[in-house]
Image (cartoon, rainbow, N blue to C red):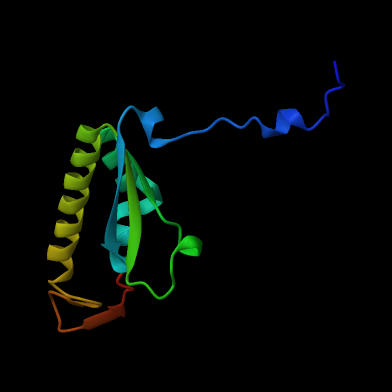
Amino acid sequence: GAPQSGFDSYDLKPQYSAGSYGGSSKKIEIPNGRVGVLIGKGGETIKYLQLQSGAKIQVTRDMDADPNSTTRMVELMGTSDAVASAEKLINEVLAEAEAGASAGGGTRRMAAQSGGDEFSMQIPNNK
């Protein structure tokens, strides 16, 4: 036989497709200002959502996102039930954040109970 070239083995990369999850994938868009809410402190919220739904939730990273877009792409992968459950949970988290945000927007004012000292601090919307 002909001698094998040493490069053949590098071409054999396993192919992963949505099918290997035994289910489907779905892409949804969320507002940029809600990415932090969805991921949570140290990734806690998104880990919890993945655990609850059984789906893998992947948010487009800052560096990969379109800087001109007002939304961020989120991909949900898993069985169709898991994907549906993840989407429902994400919508609940976003609705909760929306309800909280409508109470104050960007500036939160906290008046001290005793005197009348007022403390005002700017907080970025994604925090």
